Length: 527
Image (cartoon, rainbow, N blue to C red; front, side):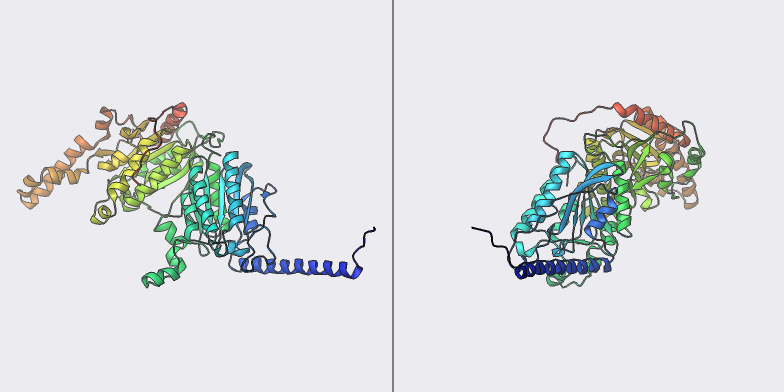
């Protein structure tokens, strides 16, 4: 029996049909890409190309396709299933990445989509490298029902298990709603692109249906709201390139995992006083009520005056930033006198606590710069839980075992003194400037409390003179840093110009620090 070949006409028709189908797919893909670009957004692959070193991307599961044949989803069955996954390098260092593809099923989460993301998350844990997730999705794939929801939960579990083991960063480049928001919320740092990114649990239509309130997607969950009000986003990027640049910068400060050290660079800092050091002697105003920019202090302490803030638009009365001292990564936590006099409120407490815990998880030393009048008083703060939520900062510092160096710049009053890296919470080296005031409260307030009756009994013209005298006497006796130094709460009182050298010396000495906590499964931080 001999084989009977296809008739030429039949073979031509099959080839012609395949060609037309391929052409239809290419046209559909081109239109989807054009729609993406028209919105000011890049495609999933274009984003990966910007993030990774050229030629380093290795894609995984490129030919995976969804298995759902209902609701017409079998038509054309595009490869990839709405997400691009793989690994590559950033500045020569290994990372894993997934990038949701809005041009395919709106980037919605389905079974194959979920399998791909979980696979690359597991790979990141196996390799011990950071994972970056690029989010641009319509949410759960309705056609696949509960399977979509299951994979959101599975992803959240992977995020939780990876937390504190490998750095996790999220980029929100488009919509991110419903169950999809909780994965970025668990990751360490989240970046949102202005204008194009939205992140909320329930969208404007649902809000209107339930409450009658009319609100736009941007007002409800735009980059501005999430970076300045809710604090869900750590950086508000001007565009997608800015977002990716910020992520690349942050990755440069971080170790690949909790067992590796952060990248170290050659120490090219001066070993003697510089002009920038001497400027610290004149930087802080003599008046306690006059503001100054704590960022000016930080840039004179870190290498090359270069540091990167996280959460810069949220709780601006507290600064959290990455920098380097003598070529090694440090985390900086500092009060910002330019905003609310650097007072600690609910948002500042939670912002700093989470940053301290991140640094501790990845063995990044913490430099604390204190200039704090205390916790913010008021009924609103009390009703919203300043006791419970403010305690998070105490917990974070007390639990941290990394090297901790604290400098009291100008004042440290009341509970603010205790929580801002005090010796009592386990700081290793505590320094203070001669102008620092360390006390239960400011001298003026203390005099009003301690001498209220005798001042009230004086004539008005005598009262102001006596109040100034008592205030100065109290300040000299109770507020100067030497009293704390006598007790060992401050290790050294130093000239401001000596700060950079003393901090660097302390951090160098603490490189071999070893500290263990009591054996336990985990603590119960007041969440």
